[in-house]
Image (tube, rainbow, N blue to C red; front, side, top):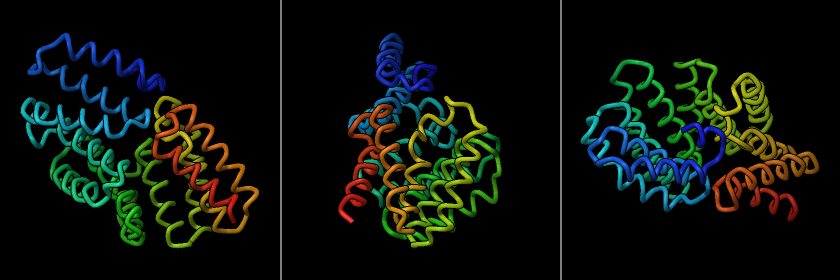
Length: 251
């Protein structure tokens, strides 16, 4: 997990696989090691491979911890958001909604975090299907309910900015993205590393909508370079940044 948080994803995969191989499948730590493998694989842009790992480990996690345990629900949320990375937005939406609903019925910080994470996936999936008002409503609902200054709030604020950009409300999206930037400055580097480039992408998208192309290109280039270095060329955010650059250059 320390390797993953440091952005050393290939090393995290190697280490987590070694842990998983050293233990019987019914050991508590074996499925957790495989879940780290899936997360680190996805962080390298290998989303189909990550999904295969989630599908392999999810039945064992469910059997080990129980269907409503936060570990099982977190894994379902992570898997669902991998579906979104593969363009399977309707499936992501359905699973994130189900996980968030189950988590909301429980108590404790871990289940609250799962509800927020699944809601973040739901917001993304709704926006990806161009259902931006629904995405905005869900993001605002969860942000109002949970005000913790952490990575999940950062991600939800960026999801809100995405939904506003999708509605051509670019000034509002820019304000939201800049608010996310302020929050980001207060968080530890290892906590926000998975969101590398996300703020700049939201800002660049808003700037394009405001016809501030030169500024947008600077932001989009920074996003692409950062995501290429951190996640590789096949990661969804790297691809999205390149598409935005192509859109700016073709305007």
